[in-house]
Image (cartoon, rainbow, N blue to C red):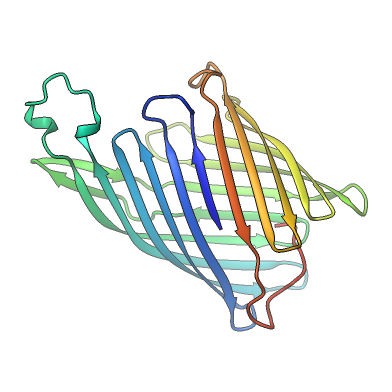
Length: 253
């Protein structure tokens, strides 16, 4: 899967994110492994991370419990040449900051055909680095808790509300609410809000049960950056059955 997100289009220094990932299951679907690459750019700051993950799955009668960890590196870079500096000779803006740190994360999922519950901490280790005698905090632990449930309205239409909680020390908690409608387990459309400060809609379709296309549109309110700066996100995924034990049925999650 690959994804591209441009947030607050037209806003100087807007956040731009690119990510690419691939994962597969092994040992008769008991073990999962994957790799994730993410590049975030906000103003003159660039964060690039590469992580490898592994997970183990326990099958119960009507549900599945999965737990796993990820490990990788994160690179942080600032480029002061991209700033409009009042005094270019100021030593505080000479060169830039660079740092590379190890990352470890963990998570767990409990799901069935009708519900999904997940908890993750993608970055367990808080990280700092020093530059010019000053210490900078690269990131803190972020906690994610997500839940979703599927209502079968009839044989073809499914209604799926979901909620996502985000938490990090030093900032208010964030809550996403989403309401999606799925047709024949192939086409999905829905609406969502983030803290009632941002609203949006998403559409997704699965072509020939292999090619997954998605688009997300977000409209911030005056409680955020205003309705002028919209957000757009595109994603493209390919589903392949590489091994004979790979599942070929479509899932709600």
